[in-house]
Structures are given as C-alpha cells and as structure tokens.
Image (cartoon, rainbow, N blue to C red):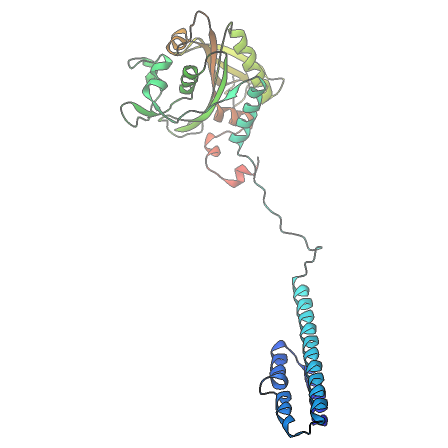
Length: 339
C-alpha cells in the first residue's frame, strides 16, 4: 500500500506537470482526489491493515493528498500566469504607431459672429435677453407704432399663424417686452431668428437672424447711438473701418438712419461686392419714437433712447467675404471647414 501511494504521488505530479489547460488539471484532480479517485480507493483498503499499520498508512495517504493538492495549485497558478501574459501580449499597444486623427468641429460662422457681437456689447454694459419667435400682432407691429393701416406693413411679407399670431418679422418686439418689464436705465440686445416671406436668393432668405439693441436712459442722444455703432463696426471689421449714417424711415424710431460701413473687400474703392459704391449697408437704427416709449409706460419727456437692428447674416457674409447667404444654411462641410 505504501508503494502504491508513492506511485500515485509520482504519477499525479508528472501528469499535472504535463497538463495543457485547466480542464486537464480538473480531470486529474477528479482522477486522484475525487470520491471515486485513486486515493479514496486506497483508503478503502485500510480496514485490512493491522492496528499498528493504519496510523502510518493514514498519515502517508494525507501527505500524498496534500502533495497532489499543492501540485494542482501550482499547475493552475502557472496556467493563469501564462494566460495573463498571453492576453497582455495581445492587448499591448504600440505607442509608436500614429494614432487616428480625430476631426474637431468649430463654431458655425453665424455663431462665431454672434459671440463676437455679444462680447462687444457686454463690454459696453448691455444685457442679453430673449423673446418668443411666435409673436402677437401687437408686439410685432402695433406697439412699435405700426397700426393696422400703416403702409410700413407692406414692407414686410409676414407669416401669419392666426389673425393675431405670427412668426416675428423682427426682434424689435422684444424691446417692447423689455420696456414693459424694466424701468430705465435699459441697455439690452436680443439676438434671434426672424421670418419673412422672401424668395431665396444670394441675399435673401425666409429665415434669417437679427440682433436688436436698445438703450433707454436720461439724456440719450444720437451721439450715443453713433458712438456705440462705430465702436461695434470697428471691432467687427477692423479699426480702419469707416461708418456712414444715412437718413431713413422706420415707424418706431425718429429720426431714423441706415448705417453703412466701408467695403472690407475693396477698402471703399468700389468693387462687385459693394456694387461699386465703396459702402455696404449693415443695419438700421434711430432714436426711439416718443409714442413707443409712452406706450410702454416710459415718460418721453424724462427719458430718451436709441434702438438698432443688426442683420446678423449680412454682418457674417460681409465680415468673412461670403458672396451667397445660402452657404450659411446648406451645411456643406467643404464650406464650413474654412471656418
């Protein structure tokens, strides 16, 4: 029995050393240590031994079992180590291999120009406010001194949703809402989309963007308007930019002006962009009409103000020398990657 136990020990160790995977190790464990294994079979024969031999054989059997269990643990440890090394080898990254270049996006030219405008006006103490794109006829027209029979309504082809509700044709409606809620002094701009029933071409779109501006305080004059807009124009187009104010008409401002800047393409000499004039119109402005102030509960005898409406799309196309406004809305990556 002693020889048999020693033989089992040697055979088990040799078999475990030659095992190729954990499945083979488990099969050997069952073969030698299982309920029907070879060690168990030896122990069942203990009854035929004398009382003096049983303790010796029992001790030897336990030693053989412990040796085989230790050999199993070593074999599994080695296999796990090799498996980990193999996996790490497969997962090893060659840091010298060039990586895949990630395409990084950028701001749309409209957003880029808008952010620039917001920074400019915030530096002058303006707040940024927002207003609804679906407006009532009152805020879009009547409160801005444009009654139902006013000919100025013909200047804008409006998208009406109901008799009284419409898609705003100008962000000027927000200045009325602001003056109703706030008391002077007021300095605000309102960027946003506006809608007019225009045919799509190189300079027109039924959806475009405006930045409305409003200042109301005591002692506000045209000089304040002129200085504000000249500062904005030079920040957008460059310090050499010249600004020209032309008399115009808007129902909600009096007096009213159109504001031109010297053409950034030709420097004012005349080219196809400015149609030979050397100037490009960028916005309309004027002193807030006393009737508009009065309608918002502001005393025109005590307060005055100026307002302006910047065409963000026009500002963007002239700033970046873009010849067709439709390029801003077509999402062509070949175009957008230039910015």
